[in-house]
Image (cartoon, rainbow, N blue to C red; front, side, top):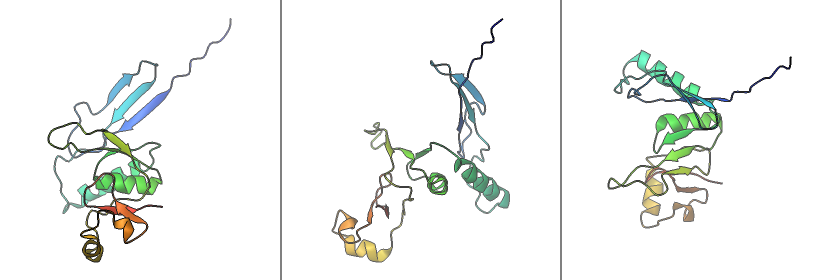
Length: 155
């Protein structure tokens, strides 16, 4: 009797957020038969920076995310910045809506693995105040793709 083997492709999604996902562990299959598992290691509900255990969970979740093959993060996410920089991968950003409208495009791939610096150095701000492209002053520095007013390194 012939032996038939079926290869099932499994994907895992790790959700890291202060808010609780509706279903902490959800199993779904796609139209192509792949199995998708969604996990959320923790949900603290609010920021508790003074609590050591909270900070340990945050660091563990950043470390866990850094093992991702593909990383999708919200625009301006510190967790996302740290995780994709540790992983050495270019993430996808879910862009923020403006005026309650869906952004176009709704997501954007980062050009580099470098994080966005939300508060640029004061001397860079002063020198570029009337310049829309800080790269004209500092060659490898440009505005971030995901955060207005921030700057990051580019090749």
